[in-house]
Length: 263
Length: 256
Image (cartoon, rainbow over all chains, first blue to last red; front, side):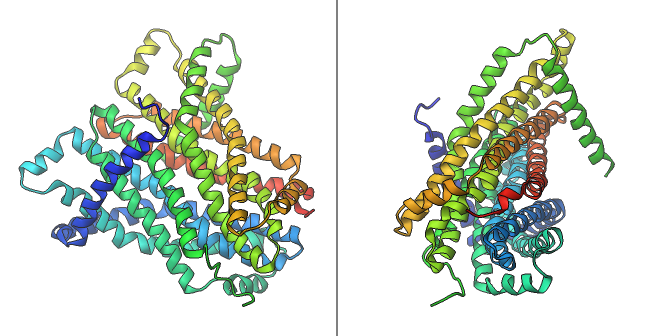
């Protein structure tokens, strides 16, 4: 046991950084395209296995954004400005966080469980013996699959979150008409914000997939070891998601809030 | 959909049995309870503080300060932090961290015992796994999640202060609007919400751990499902609770 708090995280951070750079290098230099079929299969698993649950959590977060926003602007005496709160909350903050939470819970831990079981059953060693490079085949194809599928899941999630906020503000609380809400809501966002938000979400997704691959690939110690590795990856991902969210906000909107008000 | 309802029903039954088992004598779980509390605090405190500070600095801190800065009313950020740090983000992030860090550890631990047939051995020895394993974890998570809420709120407010300092604003206005807008209802709502979050996480994670099966992949999959169900359950309960609290307490809807 280390005595300084956080030292374990730092050590893991270094290891994951080295492993992650290797996997990103594999995808970047095109070596992962050798197993493009496997990448497409992983993308399909993401869409059919995780899409619905991602959108479900995104929908609930959208409801929360709309609800809290509607009551907050009612307190300010400006109920028609629920759209301002919802636009900022949905697109810039809540969606990346909801996406990061459910990805680390569903996709990250899923990868650890799958790769960890393969490691324990010595299937990864078998791959190596067969002449298939295991990091390329298992981790590179998963990262490529995530990069193929997740941007679209994220963009659909934006629509689902907007729908949820609309329901909470206009139908549930009902202080503002549909048109009044939409006017302010669409006024306070532009396509650049969508790109920034997407970059934030995909950074989280990349880190989560790499962390999952690292903990699964290096699992040891029988079935118990797989469970422990899964728990560890989740703990690391939670902290990583929040740090990426904060840094993303600081970089994209920290100096310039991108508001269509004043000069 | 059938298995989904079956699992939800089993979790409700487990909740009822845990509550009954916790109240009824005898109480053999004292040592285990202390151990679990210490374990959870030691595992969660650093991720919790880092996460609450980061989330509150980014989401409500800088975004809201950006809007308020345009209107020249940065002192109003304190009032906004009652909504975010106390009522919404504090409890939610506490639950996410406890589910992701402590909940997964509980599922991995119980799942490992299930796979190694230790749970069956306990039952053969006449030891009730619910009373000796689930009840202490349930009580520990409820207690620790409630305690953590206070620290989540404190660090959330600290990041509000950081956001004010980033915009070179004096802190007098922040504290003035913070204290004039916060009410006792907000705080007890936050604490009560966190207690229920802890209960949801504990039941889901214990259930998934105790029903793990299928060798090496089984424990990992149990952890995977436990944390997904915890997150969705917690955020859905957050939505329902906030809606009820805000609708039934009009005093929360005025600005002071």
